[in-house]
Length: 157
Image (tube, rainbow, N blue to C red):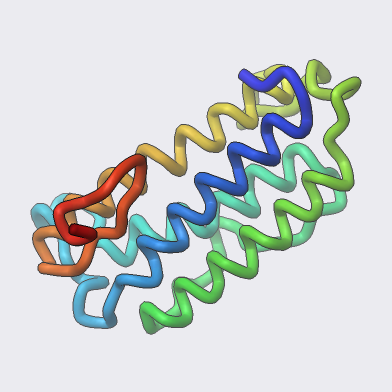
């Protein structure tokens, strides 16, 4: 949970940049990588992360207009990374213009459950981290470079 607006912005900036670094390593061929036919592909997970940026932001910043779950997934890895980068930058700017230390405790709609904004934003970031972890496993299976996340990866040595 975040105590200040700056704490959230700092954490989001860091996690967003780490997610973008992973997305920039994807190839068109790797987007179909999956653990099994019953699981999301690497491309589907990457797009899920990207689309949820706008979904979460619209619950905190009432006039935010960004991607939604219904937005079609781009066809290429490059377009997917560009979509994430644009949505990340746009949402960060919107958050910085809307979130204050004084309104962090205000409730927002967490998909049908009133939740303090600071807890909601923490959930948003951990959601991204969770799916980024799934992505790195699929990236290994697809023999892609995995960038350093919270320390060096074997690819960064």
